[in-house]
Image (cartoon, rainbow, N blue to C red):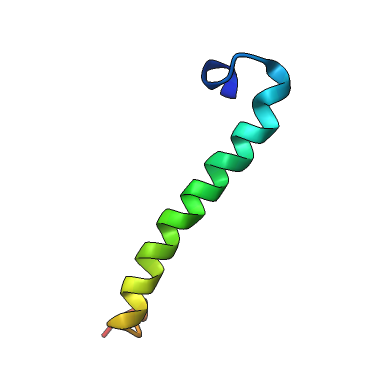
Length: 45
């Protein structure tokens, strides 16, 4: 789990929340870029 990133077991939920927040921020950058040049659709052409 996340024990290797935190010193105390009780800090795991906070670290998990921080990791999720950072991941969502990075995904938001990709989403904004795609919206500028979209729409993109999956499937055959």
